[in-house]
Length: 424
Image 1 (cartoon, one colour):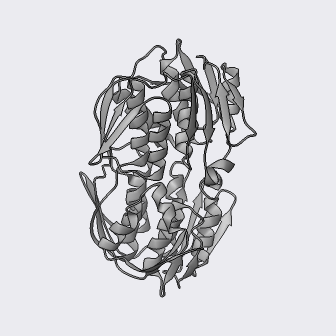
Image 2 (cartoon, rainbow, N blue to C red):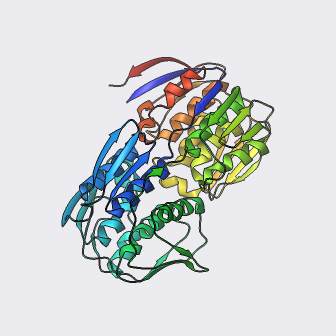
Image 3 (cartoon, rainbow, N blue to C red):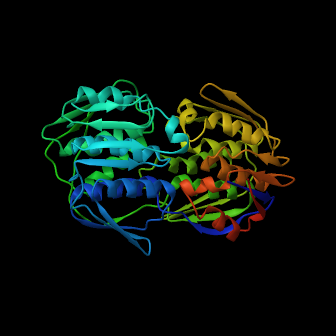
């Protein structure tokens, strides 16, 4: 891994949001499940998307990428009896494909790398054996499954990762019988579930929302179709934040009609006091005086690191709560976000379910541990815009997990990356 040195600067200009990683994951899976040939565009190959494409191939799909258009041929999908699926570091890939492989009766072994190897399997090892699937795991990867997933009732806490629910939603419609997903606690990150259901609907599969959760009719078939992916609000948020704290940035290819929960960044920037102009497919944000606010992060956990940077550049106190699930992401993001800002002169207090950020109006600079976490590294680069000195951020290659072109776009807007140094 390498360090990146970032100097204070102002970012100005226009940037196009990359394709939504969440949307591409879902489109690839629905296309494979269709059993036909589908074209998905635009697609950019982050490491997480590479993981999902690789797992689709391991289960029999064929794919070709040319000029950001991904062609998926699902005619052989789920035809294999056995498969080895390497999810790399993508939690979404793992949690989406486990029920899908089980629905196909595939004897599958799931492996991964990095932080994914320590993230909990938990729910599936409890639910799947009750539905006819044997699970062999010590609680984390590797995971081996065998047997045929049976339709029925699946009781799921709403305050776990929505990825578990999405995996079930993908798989249950192709079973020979109806199923129900019953929420046992209040649902969090509802926007990601809405994205899943919307994508499935575009591929011809219906899910009914109920007062207990969801009803999924069995014996449905995914229909092959071409698919246009959305711009990524999670990634767009970094550049919108840059405009708010340091310049004037317009982000294109984002729509408020999206089901992505992280579009809430627009309302949050307005509450912070930023100057925000919303157009049909873009958002422009200009620097202005910012003030601290209270933020319930229950449905927007991925925004917490960059929101904390904005809060550090504001006047007053920002209280972020409802974010305890961030402790089992690529890093313990409550801890690593606090450490990131404190290491460059911010003032952040860590709480069990959130953070208290005391606005300092800017930062001093210094060394930041990127914690091999893409969102920590990108957030630190935005904080560096408001440092009095340089910020040296470790683990810069971690951005490849979600947004490989991030620093290239950052430089085009005026960001100053003074050097790279390889770690031994």
